[in-house]
Image 1 (cartoon, one colour):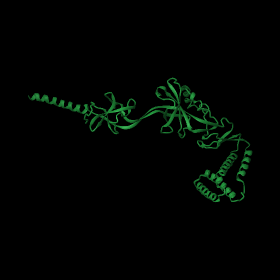
Image 2 (image 1 turned 120 degrees about the vertical axis):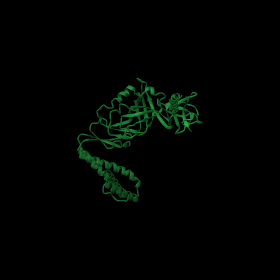
Image 3 (image 1 turned 45 degrees about the horizontal axis):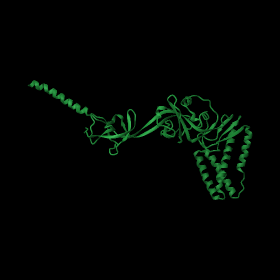
Image 4 (image 1 turned 60 degrees about the vertical axis):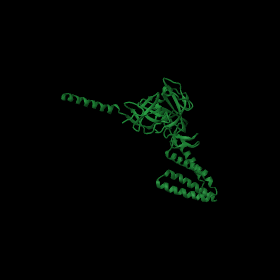
Length: 399
């Protein structure tokens, strides 16, 4: 009898262990916290920037010197560069440019001062204010602005003398024009001043693509033609002389994309592009052109009207083409179940299991974006979504 009891004890212990293990592992529940999120149907690619560009002084013989700063906004008719033919004494050229800037400033001041006719008090106030600015700028070492202020004060004083009925000692503008003519004759070189024919952003360089690919011929691009252009990014091109003005509020991006990723896309569709090397946030773009498919590729031309610093200085750009962006609740694909032919997820609420119907908005192999399919039984932020469980029964108590 004692021997029989000794045999039953190990069997009893084993049964208890099996029961504990089944209770511990057989009903183990894996959950994840529900958060809102987003996913993108995105293609990483390279694009060609196409712009409205007006080339100035292209192919001219001589030395081109910019009057406007690179990247500056310029108005139509504004001087942007000077072309010198032949050898020019640097000192004389510097004097000529200083006198020219004075003339431009004085002529501008004359226009601005027309509002002060007959008002000596206002002129005195302006002279005092400009003098204070001049002193402060001198202390701060802003000598370029000091020179402008000197011209402005001189013009104000001359205007005050005219309004007060006094005779001006000299006609400053006429004197400067005489000096300018004298220096030009001493330079003995042909000088041609270039003005912007259209407003926009000024660039001191050209790259040769300005006439090669334009908004007027970009609709003729094919995948092979665009690929040929994109392949030239790292090629050393011969430097082209000249400068240009670019329209800064509208430009285009040409990209090659896999044709099988473009279903549902058509002319005038709105998408997003992200120039991640230049600007972190995506910008809106409109589809203007889609080429016929060629070797499973399609050329797409996008219109963008958001200014991005340094983008207009680029011809080739790295970008994310975001066909669509999907927002909703982010869940693991493993958590999605089907009950009575309805997609949904099981959540743990108050310790028990509940099935919540969902609409699958977008999914990859691992993750899905979903939303509630039943307003009466919605998902809740921070729900505990069941990824795996031993069994799925509505109302089942979960440890």
